[in-house]
Image: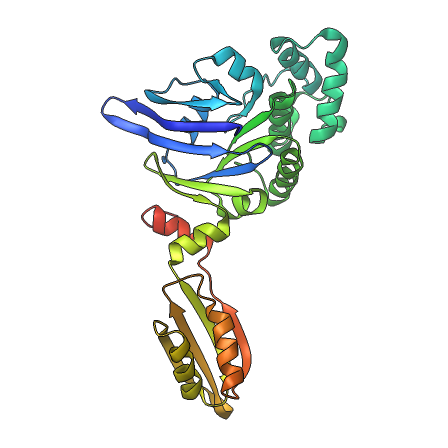
Length: 314
């Protein structure tokens, strides 16, 4: 059973859909990225999954529990909103004590639990400092610690690195990767390198609808729609390409350019991404006594996929 399962999940405001017929699954122990441009419906999706907003139609389950069972679902989920709420006049330890009480963590074990979360989130040195005195990075860590204090099975993190400097972003990424070794994580962002760095799979939504779901390699293959190989050769490039086309008749020569010293640059493609284009090029070079100086598979980047699926919005 997946940890998160959404089926035709929708949220409507008047005649407008913020999220429409969204269906997906997140496996146990998986870090899933939720990608989309601003206004795509990422935060609305997360608010429904955490029972802050009821769906207009459809449903989702967390560990088999329907969102209609909101109290039980909230016990299973740790939620970090984009702008983590906190009481700035409290110190970190007092704030986590308050959160622990709200979750019903017994007083006898609460202090140990706070210490455990402080170590996990790197808060030990600031436990007795007021939250208003902390940097944005430390405030995000406080939010993460608060979301994990009741030991949820599933973490839902909305733009967890918003407003952080590059060093803080790297620290939070490492923390999320560590969390992903023990818990299921759904992470939203519009920062593509961040998602690639920490997520096992990702889904892209636009205008509230699912556009694609898979690993970054699977999404790139889907966007590219075929195989594309670049190569630099020494020898008779025409003979090489003629031989290759007898093996792969549907192969297309995208570009062929003669360089200095008898070298040539070639670009070839095939509509079937699994045709083994690079391997066939290598075999053709051997058969025609052409030297391959360079060969590489060219793959669409995650940025290319994102732009293609979201109408060019970066």
